[in-house]
Image (cartoon, rainbow, N blue to C red):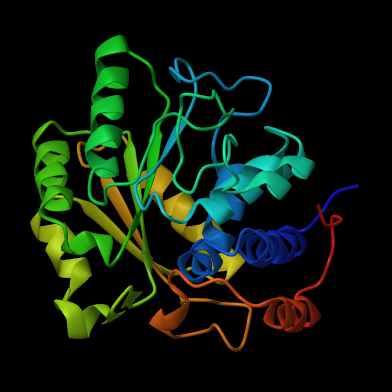
Amino acid sequence: MDYTFEQISSQVRRDIVRMVAKAASGHPGGSLSSTDIMTYLFFREMQVSPETWKRNGQGLDMFFLSAGHITPVYYSVLARRGYFPVEELNTFRLFGTRLQGHPCVEKGLPGVNQAAGSLGQGLSVAAGAAAGKKIAGDPHRVFCLVGDGESEEGQIWEAALVAAHHKLDNLVAITDWNGQQIDGSTEDVAGLGDLESKWKAFGWEVIVADGHCFKSIEKAFAEAREKGGNGKPVMILFRTEMGHGVDFMAGTHKWHGKNPSPEQCEEAMKQLQETMGDF
C-alpha cells in the first residue's frame, strides 16, 4: 500500500509520542517539529534506500543528524522506511538497545552514518563527508539537520565558514527553525536574529520554507537541487512549530525533553491518525 506524506508523518508522530512515553525519557518537541521534513527527506528526496545503504556512503546520498537528541523522529522514519523492523521501536532507550538516546554506530544500526550528541558537531562531520565526496568524484549529496537552538554553538559557524571556503556545493544543511530550546525561546536565551541574512553573509545559498507544508518542503528541496553545483553550500531554513501535531505540546519549550504520562500519551493518540500500524 502506498501512503501519502501526510499519512506517514502522522504515524511517525504517533511513534514519537509512544516511544518517549514508553521509555519515560526522550525528546518529543523537536522530533515533532521536524517530522514532516524528515519524512520527505527519507521517503522522497535522498538517493539511498535500505537495500543500498552502507555506512561509508560511497555512491549514495548521506544524512547526518547534528541535533542528536531528536532520535525519536530519526528512528521512526528509518523504521518506517524499512531500515530495521518497526517492532524494534519498542526498545527505544532500553539498556543495550541499538536505539540509544543519541544515535550511535557501535551496534551497527542501519541508516546511522555517525554518532551524534554534542550539539554543533554534526555540521562539521557533514562538511567533511561532502569534501570527501568531492575528492572522490562522487556526485551524490550530503544532508544535515541542525536545530536553531544548536545554532547558538560556535562550531556551527566554523563549519559554515569551512563549507563555503571549500565550495561544498554538494552539502545541503537544514535548520528546524522552531524558535524553542531547552530553557525557553531561542530569542530569549541568546537571540539568533536574522538567520537568513547570517547564512547568506557566510557565503551560503539560503532557502526559507514552511516545514509543515509538503508542497513548500517539496519546492524547497527542488530549489536546493537547482542551486547545487554552483560553488556554494545550501541552507534550507524551515519554519516549524515545536511539538507540532499535539496541541498540548505545541509551541512551547516545556516539551523539549519531557516524556508524556500514559494519560497524556492517550490524549495525543486521539489527535494523531494511525495509518501504518502501531509498533
